[in-house]
Amino acid sequence: MYDVYVAQLLNTIYAVRSNGRVIAKVPKGSDCSRLLKAAVDAVPNGGSLNIRGGTYVIKTPYALALNPDGTNMFFTGFPVIGKDIHIYGSTTSPTIIQLAPWQRTSSRHVTMMLIRNKGGPSLGYNSFTLSDITFDGNRSQQWTGIPHDGEGAVLVGSSRKNGVFKNLRFINSHGDGLYLGNNGSGPGVNERVENCYAQNCAAEGIMLDTNKNSSVNNCQAYGCRVGLFLNGNDDWQTRGSDNVTATNIKTDSQITCWQVNDFTLDHIEMDCSKAASSYGFVVRDGNGVIRNSTLKSDPNKASSFGGATYFYEQARVLLEKCTIAGHFGVHAIGKSHAEAIACQISAPGGCYCTTDPAPVSSTIIARGCTWTGKKSDLKDGSSFVEC
Image (cartoon, rainbow, N blue to C red; front, side, top):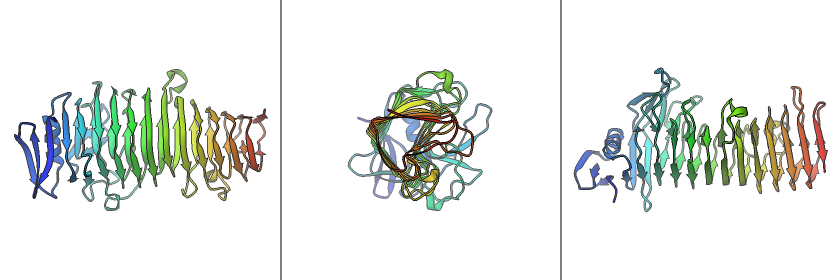
């Protein structure tokens, strides 16, 4: 039994306690932001909220500064502040949270749902669940412009642990789909993202920012600026292992691992052939492995936008049993190090490529790989070893 329910009955939407006591009600089709906040506030820590099937439109009347100094103001219509609770949609008919028209501008930063502490050094949740809900950002009826960092459907912040995000859909977002961030407060530990779907997001479909011992499994992202983004921090050289994994991911958008230590990607299907400006599978700094995966881009785009991979700065990447196809195959520049084992590589611009306008000292090692197209395009300062 759930502690609080939100449900639609005839022409009214109700928030009620499990004993039937009404917390709040609004006419069906009207703004549900205050009703949802009242429902969340009524759930005890450790308790549960069930939002039954139907569409719930929200405006964004609630403002919260994400930075301790009171800057970086965000507006939301579904705040979950300082709560350890579990929120479930319907498993039988869609539960849809839809952003009302014209909520965000270039100076009014909006996230539909905001999950974090009240600010400052206090910790976020110790246990949290969000499942079985569709977040529709109604992108065509929002002011356009480059999304501010963190804007979108669901933004999570603060140091926290044991978050579960599953069976969620993020569509038509003016920014991200799901953004597990930290706002400079430290990592999210033991976070799990499972069976989530993102489509038509102006920024990242799924974003993990400074996470540790966390995973993304069985997820898809289409028509996003970046399908999956695993982000770290500038302290990557001293931080130690992040241990972030992604398995069974499908996307037509770029995948990025940025300053993450010990990432593991397995069974990835990335095909950026139709993306306008994708760099393929991108790794900057940090280290990790990708295996049993297909990495594709458009071989007719004679630039890095047609590359299947792009490794730079001090990235160290191991590719095992991957199919790699694009204008460039394994593209390693800067001080990066890439090792390919038992991969099938096809690239007219260079299966093994180290060319870049800037100086390079990168290394590519190939062991037991096959190639078609142009074998290599190497720049002075780099090295290529085939075993």
